[in-house]
Length: 589
Figure 1 (tube, rainbow, N blue to C red):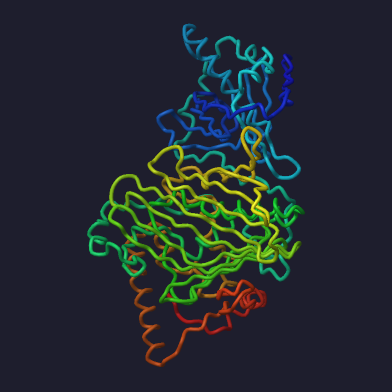
Figure 2 (cartoon, rainbow, N blue to C red):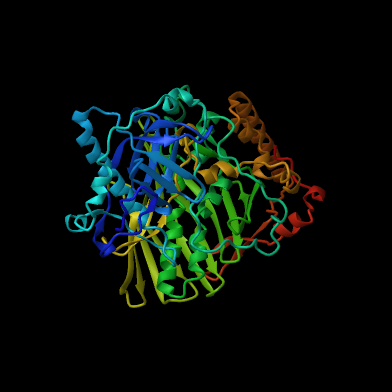
């Protein structure tokens, strides 16, 4: 590592030696000064925590759960200035100015310097492992005793400084407690931005700036007695049990399906990867990433779609367009289709929920499909079982377990198995996944591991490569249903988009909209009214011996001989005109 001892700013250039010798840095935490963003002057004392490559900060050490912001250090460039004891982290979207505060007694100075030395060394080790040309990232490890010697004495000398006294301008009273600080954007895709798919309805209809939070925080559900609701339904399918709206989150099951393509850049990468075994690794990692958004969501459930309900998500910035429809009511079946220049993704899903007294098990029936046009690949895989623990009392948490089998029906060159490890108890082994790609003879070509809510690494430590890392969570996510930034954006209804959507789109649901805005009574009233409308429509169909026909999906047999719901390829054509305003749609709400 090269570090100048001059007073000018210096960018740390790199670490000498083999990166394979580097082990994951230990967790570091303590106070630093952070330059105020508003009104662009003065410094504020903030509590920082560096763990797993993410630097988080809050107002006080006791407020670890009330984050003011977070920084993905692995995607940042770090520079330091010895004279002023300053650290700058450039994330491309923001520059975070940090400064060492030594307003401590001389008796504690040496221990403080020791902490800060470890902190910055850890920060350095993480920041150096930014994305390579192929989109992968080495697994960052803690400095071993051997590699510590390669770090020059100047690193510790950097912290051998005089006391830094807080000035009046750095008082915490300057900062409004309601002010929301820097928001981090999603890491850049390893591939260049894609142009919108041909025929996309996104042309000229882009939300200039997507929202970063919901209109209202999550209301309390303490007044709802789950036991009174569930005690007579042990072992039964809970999809048929009416639940109070306080237990819902302001998203729909169709929107939950859209969350599975949040990390679509993995499929973009797969479609540009020549090696079929490596392509399988990227596809498998994409399949794992579909579970990441559920980690903070065990406390509430999505709204159930009504028959004929639809949802679209047109994202030219991510290069895909998504459409979903509730194609069946009994049994409830949701179908979705997502296309891009680099992939096509589709699935239909049926949920079976069982309550077992202390936990609720969710079994998803259906097959997920992905095709890659560059190679003619057609991948299929199953979903694993999900379980919500402590359903009645205590801290609810969700786990996924079982074996996922991924095969390419267009070629038998390789196959993949991913095991979602079932935790024996709440421990460090929870949420772990293990996977392997094998050839036709069963020989293991690639292995990968990680946690479905954090990241996936290919290979064997200490030389493993980071294939995927989950995006940082938004500030105050615990007050907003545990939504990711992607989830926060899903129910936003932009004025320019509104006239182009069919009236069956989820964003027009009044019960879901009321809940999002914090109107619990209105949400409950609208929920009952929408459910009654659905029962009335179903009665009319039965009396006239008419079967509901989905508008945008059709039942068909795919190459693997499985019956599934496929897109009828009419949605985007009708939206482009747009013809929805002239079509006859049922009144869903």
